[in-house]
Amino acid sequence: MTRPLLTDEESDVAGLVTAVVAGRRPSDERPDEVAEMRRRLDDAGLWAVDGPDDLAAVVLARLGRDWPALAWASVQARVAADVLGEDVRHGETPVAAVDADSPTVRLTEANGMVAGVVDRVDAAGERPHVVVLGHRSARVIPPTALRFSRLRRTGLDGALTSSAELVAPTAVVELTDVDTDAARVRLRLGGAAVAAGLADAATGAALAYSAQRVQFGGPLIALPIVRDGLFGAARVALTAWRQVFRAATPWQAAAVLDQACEHALDACAHAVQAHGGYGYLVEYGVERLLRDAVSLRAACDVSTARRTGAASLTGWEAS
Image (tube, helix red, strand yellow):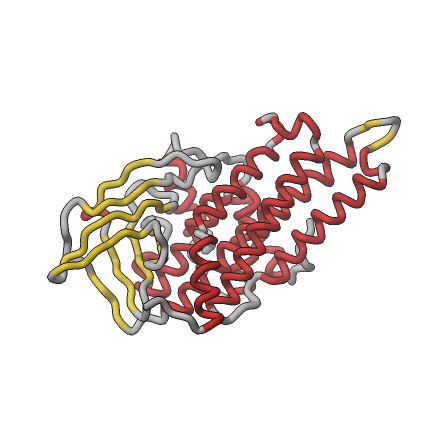
């Protein structure tokens, strides 16, 4: 709706994503269906996309329109595949990628043994591998070493959000000489693509409703104030699209992620407002988009991206 014009290949891929997920609704109460959807996307070549970043952005944004929980899980799988290789590229294996700098990652190491907890993972899988991105290294914690506890959240149904606590101090694989800067860039820009898809879905819903809803003797779009509001929402959604996969450094990617998530929140809030009182009803779907936008911002850990991005930009490091 508000995205830039796509190439023929990108349009075909976007249509394939829609065909795979059409008519399905994610739910934490049906984890087997979430796992099946990961496999279906993998069979279609759409999971952890191994291809140009622009094409991956189209897949993630289109998936973000319909199933943002799975879209964010796909972002993490793509990043983990870059770090670990093909073993986790397939939809059979749920994986969470987290930043060691995040306050939600509370791990300690003594005598080569790691203990602690990751407070939040959103892997769209019940027992994911957890990849912890450090500085030029990454730790890989297998699900057999972890105790998972389901967490409540506002949106992102189907993300199977949980905490992951090490059952006991454990020797975990640590990969060295890893380009974690590139991994963080891809993680953040992937999250921005999902947010852009959410903003696009919200803007499309607001436009469609305003065109068919009759008020004061005509459709809502006949009112200048409504048209101006729709234009503003479409503008921020388009801006989010244009920024995705246009950054090269961690701080730039953090800035794009931060703005894309804010744009998604603005667009989703406008969609609820455009529906009036109906916007708060589950049947209309836009309240779900707003809840998803709130939870996506938390799942992407925007606050950590902003904090570490600012430190990277200024060259400041904590002693």
